[in-house]
Image 1: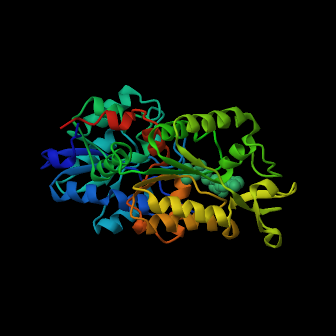
Image 2: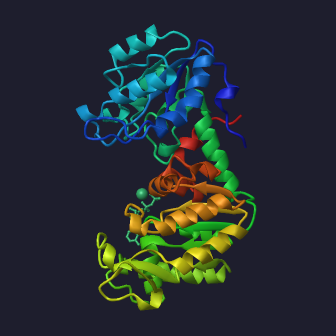
Image 3: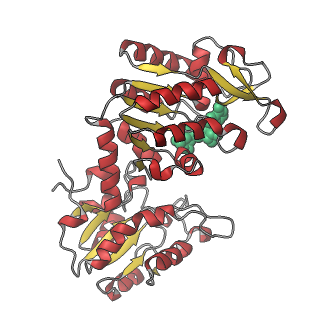
Length: 394
Ligand code: ADP
Ligand code: MG
């Protein structure tokens, strides 16, 4: 079941409504501090332009809640895109309406324009059919390249596809192929690494990994609740007491399914995030009452590295410590380096863990860094993502 991509459609002189993910981080002065998301969409945009399409780009930025918010206009994004393409990309002042229609009518083949932040329109997140139709009236073809929003059914990534032929862009295609390859007939052993702060966000994917994976390595704040379920005292560590039953359930299920689930054996602890002097490595059965577990420990890093070395496929979500603070980033960096050095097919998904992998300087040694954390997790949970479901089949 292959999806239709931009390679499969006639593009010449066609108006192509292209949903991209330009939701880039900006500083207080409105400058883009990381243009990765814009760069990720370039192969598709360039292909459309080179094939003489008239490209209408649509993206959201931030959470304007259906209202115009001046600091969330796509002005800086249009500037950045123009520079990257070395061609001027005009931005409309509105999402839809007569002036947008007029701007589209002036587009020539091989030119692109960018609509204003689609989330300025109250109908966008409601997947309002009127808005979806208004988008569709601008174009002949819909192209979806916004994997990061694929788990949401909004007007510009799902609704519009109800009125136009729909194809995937190259980024969307790569995401789908990489995520699928990781779970459908993966090279074994399949090893999953799960970290991050909260169990609540990870229950779904953990339940899925228990069925799919051969080995699961747990770390980060969420591992604390598992350690607590095993009876250890965690001092002042982040703990979700109300999630203990779920953690126990996952531990039992892992045993039943004969999945090798490894928790940290030792941790890096400190009395606070900024008290360098108190940082030390302790076994999980000796966490002092006034300390917090903030990273996986030295021995754990070695054990995890040994498992990673044997893996055929590695899937990773969530950092294994408070990687934003140097003293507690080492476990996450060590795991990133182990994965980079291993021969496995590797997929890393999650806003924070992708940032950590980049910080570790090994991003180019990971087979696939997903641009959509939430979407990738839902994909691995086995859910049908509405933004993928609307793409036509070949
Ligand atoms: P991702 O974005 O990769 O899915 P999450 O958002 O689930 O990851 O989790 C990232 C956060 O988890 C980071 O801000 C990190 O500081 C935090 N974290 C990791 N380990 C711990 C820990 N031991 N204690 C507290 N917070 C932690
Ligand atoms: Mg996160």
